[in-house]
Length: 103
Image (cartoon, rainbow, N blue to C red; front, side):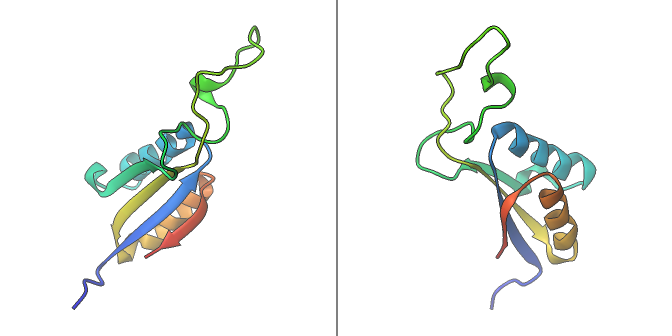
């Protein structure tokens, strides 16, 4: 018999910065335990996302950066009580998540 009291919500973000912000909101704003939140690259390679932001974005005096690995989106998944799943889903979408999936 499977446990139907918890649900996993998975969302992808185009930048590591956006994924980090999502984790911060889940933990600090919604009170989710950090041990219930997981972050990983969607692809096989390490990545900081698929578009520059934050520390991997060029400054006004730079033409471009080649040190950032921009190869795949960042996945954030959350194991959550089903009673809080709608709040988590809505928060992730508000923060710009793509492909939000519940399982």
